[in-house]
Length: 134
Image (cartoon, rainbow, N blue to C red; front, side, top):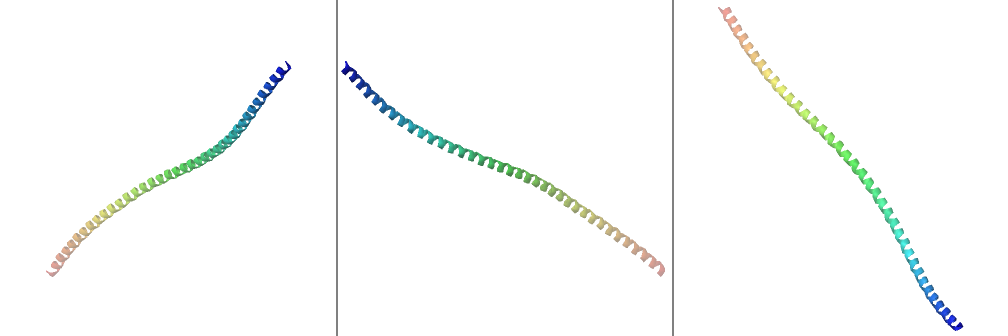
């Protein structure tokens, strides 16, 4: 019986040794998995950092675009004002041109009347000169 117990204990010891070897192997695999997980976490942290950086850059770009759009709106408003002023200046120039044409016509009318008065005065003068001669 003692031999049987020794054999059984020997078998149990062999199985325990085999289990111990398997546990060591599993622990080694777990260590590698933990190392890989740590590496993956590190990579994830770096990716998150890069994403934060990209988001920050996008925010700055959006801000610049908003500023540029504001400047464009301001320029469009200024151009509208310039076009309006140009239209006003054109209308004023046309009014001045019309006024000059009217004044020219009035001057021509005054010259005509002056010429008519001169002719009348000359005729009166000739009549007076003719009467004196008689």
